[in-house]
Length: 311
Image (cartoon, rainbow, N blue to C red):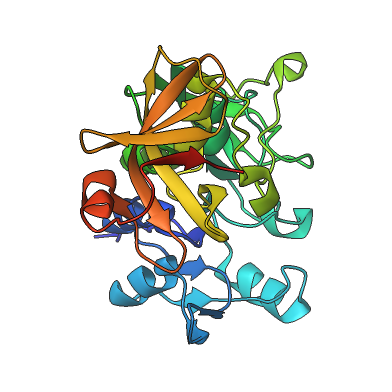
């Protein structure tokens, strides 16, 4: 009796977001190799640590490759020796054509938006910042220009009320896993029809840097709430309070309030801050050098002024 040949699948990813997909693909088909970022120093002690995907792959007994450069001839030789049928990508770096073109059936990526909307490094953050009501995930074949390849499948859904980027990330992580597995099935069967994106409808989702995260109190209160949630928990919207950085991680929009933007007051165990055309009630924050905490917990130990103004 002839043994059924298993497909040769390579998985590429780095953060936690890709782990459920990697596990599901491996459980059904087996993964020949995982490619992830090199170990990097992290935290206050700068201890060298592996990526979350590497840790999960090693626990599954999957060989791991960590090239410094994707065009390194030694790495390319290793990849060609694996002779992948499929390369599956979730949350990884930009790939040169020498890498993604070597798979026989296709190299696909799972992107956290309904492409062509929110092309770029931070689609989850920008969807929340911009107050979108719906978003989704896209499985697409890689092409020369970033996030422009032909679409294999999409899954659209409503963004939960008051969701932060972290909340949406956790929700998408498991939908992405199902989509990645189904995309592998489609590529292996050949029973799919990839279609081109409408490039005229493309919108950007560029990488977010710390300076962008500084709160502008002149924003409309509802837009400010979206801004805070779109940057939570990382990198975090911040302001200066008492010469220290304070991150605001969750807030509720309140329609009333006419005081000068940036003024705050504490009342009945709540922390209110005026913005333009309304105010917000802070529900979660992180003082500089401390952990994130609920506002109620923070106020229990707070002994400062009950009103004032942020920068």
